[in-house]
Image (cartoon, rainbow, N blue to C red; front, side, top):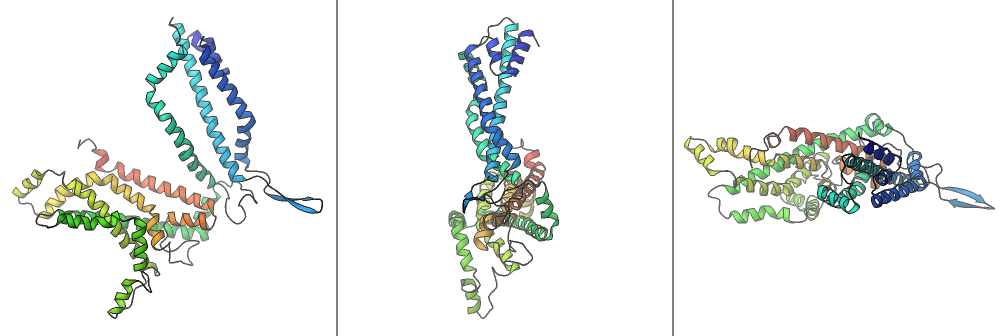
Length: 437
C-alpha cells in the first residue's frame, strides 16, 4: 500500500473523516466526522445500556416498597422490552460499524488516487460516482433497512426467546424477570415426557398430514385437469367453473360451512345417515375420523389450485409428441407416463415443494375445522389433529409458554428448510433449469 493510502487509511481507522480531511476532501470529511461524533455519543450514552440490558435481562422486577405505613408498587425491569431494545441497539451498532468500514475504504481509495497523481474526487463527484456505480444498492437500501428491522429483527427475537425461561406462571414480566437458560428448553422438549410425548406425537401427525395433503391435492388436481381436457368432454367451461368455485370462495367461509356440515349432532351429513337408518359418524370428535375429515376437506379446497395450474401446463405440451406416440402405437397410459407426467412434474416440482412446506404450516384448515381437537390426555396443551404450527399458537396465545413455542418455531423452520433444499436440489427443475427457455 502506498504512503498516502496507508496514512489516510490509518487516520480513518482512528476516527471517521480524518482520512478524508487528509485527502483534502473537506466537506466529506466533515460529514464523516459528524457521523462519528454522533455515533460515539449515541453508543456511549444510550445504546451501551440497552446492549448491557440484553445480556442481563434486568436485575429486579416489579415489586412493592414500604413507604411510611403503606406499600407502594414500584415498576422494575421488563426483561422482554430490554431484549428488544438490546437487539435494536446491536443492529444500529452494526450499521454504524458498516459505515465506519466504508469510511476507511473510501479514504484508502482516494489515497491511492493521490499516489498516482490524480486529483481526489470532490463531494459532488463522490455522490455522482456513488449513484452511477451503486445505483441498485441505493434503490435497495430502504427495502434492506425495512427487512432488517421488520423481518430479521423479529426472527432474531424469536430465536433468542427460545434460550430463555419466558413462560407462565413464574417468568412473565413485568412482575418477574426472564433469565437466559441456554439449551434447556430444547432439552426439555426432547427428553421431558410431558413435552416430548406431545412434540413427537404432533410432529408425526404433521409429517403424515403434509404428505397426504400434498399428494392428494396434487394428483387429484392433475386427474381433474386431465379429465376436463379430454377430447369429447362437453361443457368444459362449466366443469372448470364448478371446480374453481371452492377456490374462489374465501377459505374460512368454506371451512366454517364444512365444520357445521360435519357436526356430529346436527350436521346435515349425519342427519342423512340417520334418515337412511344408519348411525352417524363422529367426524370431528373421534381422532381417526377427525384426521380423515381434515384431509378430505383440504382436498376440496386444494385440488382447484393444482387443476388450474396443470391445465395451463397441458396447453404448452407440443401436440406433435402425442401424434408421434400414436403413430408408434402408444396407449393412453404410455402417453401419460412418458409425455404428460414428465412435463407436468418438470414445471410443478418447485410448486409441489412449496405446497408441502405450506401444508406443514397449514394453520387455517386445522384451526377452523377442528381447532386441533379432539383433545387428548396424552398431549400437553394439544389435540389429536394439532399441527406443530397450531400447537405453537396454543402455547403462545392460550398458555403463555413463549420459550417452548419459540423452540418449536425454530424446529419447524429447520424441518421445512431441510426438506425444501434437499428436494429441490434433486429435482429436474433445478438440475435442468436451462432445458426449457
